[in-house]
Picture (cartoon, rainbow, N blue to C red):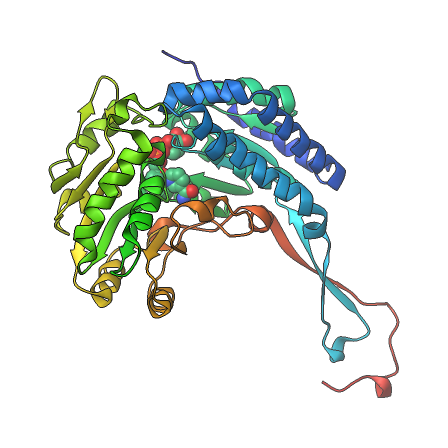
Length: 452
Ligand code: NAD
């Protein structure tokens, strides 16, 4: 299907100017107006849930349940948490005033920034456009949302429906690909929030530098899973498989590969194969719960990795249907192509390592991951991984789910990104944290003043 992006590139400067005029009018700032906008976003998600579910099925073969759980319901959860706490988060926070400056008061307020650009990717095309938008609106800003052209149905649904619920002078959707995003990046924004790959992240940051615009870069990378002998391998395999094969592996925090310590490698193979069968039956192609690869380019990239190890389970694929079976590869060399870049698909390599020292060294020799997971019963191992590695997030016993805990910051470090959001962290990201001092215009006699 060919789809004409809206609006045209040439209209972008006027559109951004209108959003700036709205911000400058002050009407995005009062708490009541922010809550109205969040209520409108809530209405959009609940009343149009089915439309979005159909779009997500068309773009990514997502089942209605998965689409609700990881996209629509996810954003609602983020939104409800924000609504419940927003007043408290926006309350000025008192700060202590050193004796020398007394009498005086000081506090910290969160000022909205202005016009925020949100650029979203295709893998969770609704969640990754609208969860940032919750924070942008809650913090009192206006926004341009640029959905991914690689999820065209979801992009079109957002462009069509958002203006019905949210004033287009406050939130504008700009559809399109590189030309439209490039035109957007030529405008001055007060914050740019980008989710996607590091190559484009660099383009975004360079464009932002021209106007000293702060950026949040939510990027990806290879998120390892460390498995120690002694961990319950059936539970471990089930949880790894659930995190890995969700959305056919196209999840930024999906377990990318397993570092299996000692004898855990052999045991894990059988349990991973069992877990895949439990989740999707003997023929995952027939399971309504199993997704599809977003497009042929990504399908071809993934199919080329299938011979990089011994197949434990999976390997089947069908280009016309963009189907690639949940696949586990064993005896994978650290130098194999599948170990060189983020997989971002349903292929799980197992790399055997002799001990925890080797696992930690393996992780630290590579880019800092967006997430690190470990399955272990050892508190010492947990402490060592916490203290001796650096990653966006660290989770023991449960991959992916930290993303859905709105009191936790979500973001990367190093090559996996910069900045963080969700819940109160979004308010921090989309506000300026301003220092305010208030000293009465009455001087005390010099003799009464405390000495510094
Ligand atoms: P993508 O191709 O949809 O690109 C993301 C956005 O960048 C799109 O809106 C696209 O239009 C825009 N874009 C593409 N090329 C551009 C260019 N030359 N100039 C300006 N804008 C451009 O998505 P992707 O990058 O393939 O997404 C996958 C990556 O995103 C993976 O690495 C994944 O790990 C990462 N990711 C991270 C998170 C996170 O929250 N940290 C979430 C999802 C995905």
